[in-house]
Length: 495
Image (cartoon, rainbow, N blue to C red; front, side, top):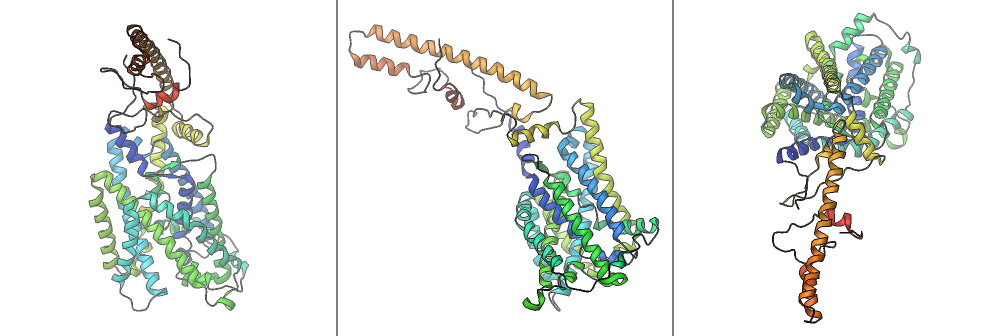
């Protein structure tokens, strides 16, 4: 009897392993979303926007709402199949998107690195070499980026509560004279001016783009990502509201609003200056954001050139050289180049929207509703659906996943049919083997009926135990898989 063993080829296993490298939990994704949403918007950006409009509050509100929609598009795209779907359907479109994203992440990484280097020089040290700061920062950031998104996600998950608590304490114990009427009128400029200011600082928005490369693994139906962004949204609007109340039209002179706000604290009278809490929080947030941007650039370049290590080295060197050669103050002048900000703004808006529409169209053409595979996976993880049966081991002893466990949607019915056929084949095989074993044992007893109990024992030993697997199988016979033994252990099978 030929027994059926479900295996996959090495290519399918390798593809599965590549997909698992960028697979993180939804709560870890929420931690990164919270950190990245705060990084650009509550540090340097308030002072920069105050140079363009009198009250940046409505513009930031509108930008955050648009960015929330971009996060929704990105998450839907990853659930529809992500970059693997894009690659299988159109390699030209896939490579074009990767090329654009590679340049996009490099530019944003350079802008953020230059901003962080400048802040460290001004806030922490006097007359320190810029090269020493760059080397110190990029050594840590490059290590996180090369190790991958899983390490960044775990670090973010550990630090997100500490960072959120630090900022919340600074808000609760805020001590200063504030004039809340500075927030009125809400709209102080025409819509064209708001749009120009938003477009000019395109590098400071659209933090959802790096998440195009991840795979989100959910547990249950908790909405960690949406909750994390809404909490970050509340922090951002509170900081801008207090910024107008504290400084009014002089907000444009604030280099880093997060650090400045932490210096106004009731606890300073007892504990001394507490602006270090804002400095540490902002440096940690920026380093995590930089690592995500460099990782995304490495991921995009590695998919194009197929040499991830070489791409990683090139990305780190280009970022270090660009920040070292350019004047650190030049990042503030990027907004003066209108096409620069508008280009980054267009890329951050158009790419997530385009790839999501493409994936949705492909899913509809194939006759599958969007998110089919991930809904099945979420039910499986939450315990509402049966776990997919793992396959037996192959001849070399390497366990692999079955095709039924990997397929979903339309392939689910086919997987169930194959499973039923295999179970019938296995049952028939065991019945035949059980009858053969009994026949052999009976023949041995008849031949040695006068030879005593020892001969009977030998015959019984030669026959073996078909259910428990004890004894040595005869030559030419195939053994049972461990999963099959466990399935039929303790059950009576009639020949």
